[in-house]
Image 1: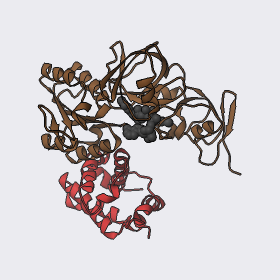
Image 2: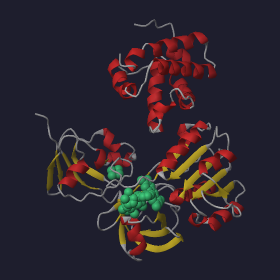
Image 3: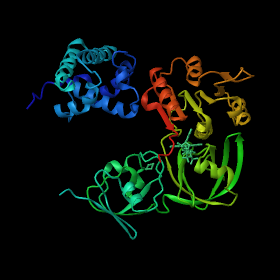
Image 4: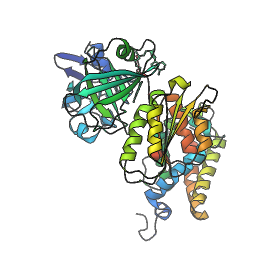
Length: 126
Length: 324
Ligand SMILES: Cc1cc2nc3c(=O)[nH]c(=O)nc-3n(C[C@H](O)[C@H](O)[C@H](O)COP(=O)(O)OP(=O)(O)OC[C@H]3O[C@@H](n4cnc5c(N)ncnc54)[C@H](O)[C@@H]3O)c2cc1C
Ligand code: FES
């Protein structure tokens, strides 16, 4: 049981409303960043937005159903197109910039970055 | 042994093969099911399940009353078990007659339809037009629901089976079937002061004409900026009507644009996405409607989003050609 007196990271960030507030900002940064934008060419933007929300919910410490296997399946075709550590670094950086833009405290941003970091090996299918 | 779901349709019976959709299976058995996009977007292949379980994915995007009625899209339906299906009923299909036919531009037809029963729709939605041969194609609705005639703008495609038929063979009084409507591209009231941009090329103007008039009628107060693009001036149509509408409503502006031209009075020259970006550099807080050529729609959607428009505020209809 988590300690009921302490709000979770997800609660501190503002829960689902925070995800909704962050998703366009984050997705726009991704599409504007030449390091990673190419991996999003030609994808259906509405479906991608749904995926970005699921990713942010997980990174914010919220309820999610991601498994390591899903991460691998979802990214295998990108790894074969050259996805590597530098791209994961870029995404974590853009995530931080989004949260800073929203006025989120630095210690919470570090916790979000740590959760995103924990998926690195699955994303890169290692 | 993997289960092969059995699909029944009237007297026909087919065992689905691995990975086959209900549409594929029925067509393989020679059952004539109307279809066009084969990708779950146009709504042409809608059938009704009389018995059996429909996967939720096959009902994605359908309105609730249709979901409740057992309707589903056959082209994206891969059931786990047996299904008995039937044609869409009178709650989703109505008979109509061609009540007027004319030209709006050298390669654009205006098709007026009169329905024999109620066909409720929102201005800007699209329908499936079905010929007696069973051929089905999607078209956006350019009229308003209370107008007597339902109006379509159809671009004549060389060798086009539906557009060619409408241009060369169809006669006043010919009977067709309308199915639908579908689509989320329509004006929603409640944000009357929000600025709105509408961008379409070619017959992409059809839904936008409906949406603009719907918004004005609903008392929209914020700016409404309509950009219509064509290759050359000959492809711009309804110019007088739209100019008159702009003259009558201070918050509505109409910007005709062409790709090739010498900048004749009142027409902007250049790629439409650049013309829009030049006139509307920041779009945070705006709502956008984008219709027409699929590549252009995809490109504009991305540009509007990168100019600050929220993705949920962008309504887009790509006029995808039918899959063969
Ligand atoms: C949601 C939706 C809304 C639509 N709304 C409209 C509308 O309001 N007005 C309108 O005119 N169309 C609209 N379309 C397109 C329309 O459904 C048909 O695809 C189009 O009219 C061609 O049908 P056809 O039977 O005449 O040609 P087909 O017999 O299907 O095609 C003949 C040949 O032309 C090719 N072709 C088809 N379309 C094009 C094209 N655009 N450019 C170049 N080659 C092409 C085909 O690949 C084929 O080789 C819409 C499509 C969708 C999905
Ligand atoms: S939705 Fe099935 S054919 Fe278009």
